[in-house]
Amino acid sequence: MRPVNFIKVLAILSISTEMSLVMAQNVTFSINTQAERKTISPLIYGFNAYADGYGRTGWDAHGGKANLDSLNLTSRRLGGNNMTSYNWENGVSNSGADWCHSSNAGVTYATGAGEPSTTNGLAYYAPGAGIKAFHDQSLALGTFSLLQLPAAGKLPKDIVNLYPPSTCKGYDLWQSTAGPSNVDVSRWLDIVNDKPTAAGSLSLAPSLSDNVVYIDEEINFLVKKYGKASSTKGVKGYELDNEPDLWHVWPSSQGAGTHENLYPKLTTISDVMQKNLALAKTVKRMDSSAQTFGPALSGYLGLFSLWAVWDGSQSHQPADWNQYYAEPYLSKNTGDRYRYNGMTFANVYLDTMRKASASAGKRLLDAFSFHYYSQASYDPANRVQAARSLWDSSYVEPSWITQGGNGFTDGRGLEILPKLKQSIADFYPGTKLAVTEYDFGGRDDVSGAIAQADALGAFGQQGVHLATYFGDVEAYIAAGFKIFRNYDGNKSVFPEVSVKAVSTNNGNGTVYAAVSAAAPDTVHLIAINRLSTPLNASLQIAHPVALNSVQAWGVDASSQAVTMRAGLSAIKQNQFSYTLPAWSVMHFVVKP
Image 1 (cartoon, rainbow, N blue to C red):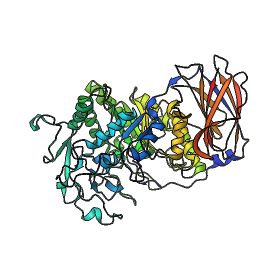
Image 2 (spheres, rainbow, N blue to C red):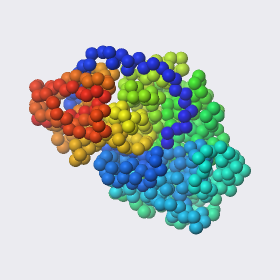
Image 3 (tube, one colour):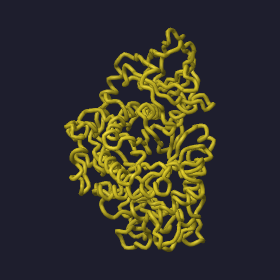
Image 4 (cartoon, one colour):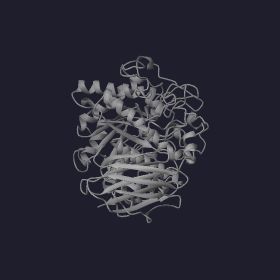
């Protein structure tokens, strides 16, 4: 879930954006369909299932089932801060710092499982009602389900107040929802990953009075109902909790983390690793065919040192940080301090998982997951450039991360996906990469469509395994998805084989290209104009066959809809030109 704002964004002039506006409004896009060919994972076109700012539930959370069908998306995640405390036995979860540390029915209600019972004691919902509603919707949409499991250590026992006051002042101090660090521990239950034999067999109707929640029992509930991940209807993936870098951290002016009551001690690297490893082993024991994702870090500082705390002048680290802030995690003994752009904890996590997997005789981590909320998308002019930090080494975003002297990239591009792929290659080869939350903003502004399309293009080109947007997939965000997944209204899609596509000026415009095994002669291009003025684009395609037909669909500031475009020039020797509208995304389909 979008983290509590621990980060003080520095207001730095966006020189690169300003320069692009005064340069010549021309660009050349060069495509070679036989070079840099790689399969695009279908799971990058996903979203978080109950992320919504309007209190809507179920199918309505993203504009209704018809809207979700029209988006033609491929994966869904049920995750976030509330899922860290989701009690599958009766549907209660705790909001932590997001909402008064209230124990409520937020997750279960938001999945569309209905109102909680107020007359049946602790049995507010039937066991697994929320996760069942979530996965049933995934099956109806034909999407991959990624379900977050709890690891932090405590879960709420009951609902205290469904509707806390609008202000949290005093609420979390006197209400008995207070966590283990306060007086009333009776309202909290222990997490136990593996149910001991002495406690009996795994039950589909777990006890609500034993003060324990068994995670293997939760997985067993899903396996019994839907089958294992390898089956047609099984839950395919499990995430090892959420944003441990924000569970409980060094106290800043904006708090001490999301779950400082649920998790009363300051987090350490060793404790987070132990909890992730233990949960991963349970998942693989219960369903060896299921994919595991972790650690779902909240952002760059979590990748840097686990704690996502920056006070404007320095970051703060866990008590055991110094034993990990060393080689090989700093540079793989190369002496290049920018080999990973400072994302040291990512290396620690991957290496620890690799060693534990070797000892266990099986892979315990399938995908390294993290969250990405850009620190450089605070206005439209910056937002149209911001997704370049995912992939473009030449783009130095105007943020505290790249500012010289802060000890991170020191004036270099963030280049987060290539750097994390380097981490994987060095410390746990074969691990996939997943972005399980991200949002660049701009839902009601065309800059949002540009950032969204750029992110999707980068995820495909950079080999990301799964990506799930966090927010309402509506308006210009929906357009950013549809340009890839339903550009013509008939669910036609950007194909599955990425090919080489290069721009002469990524600050002005960027291009992504792909072909399909089913129709290898047809070439699809996604062209982005980042400028607030039209951009004259020359498109040059190296392709084994002659191309003589082109159609185009696009979105720009004139409308949130993706529409078919006219005014295309003739193709000569596999080349054509087109003037991209100001701040726009175009999908060209080029055929023999």
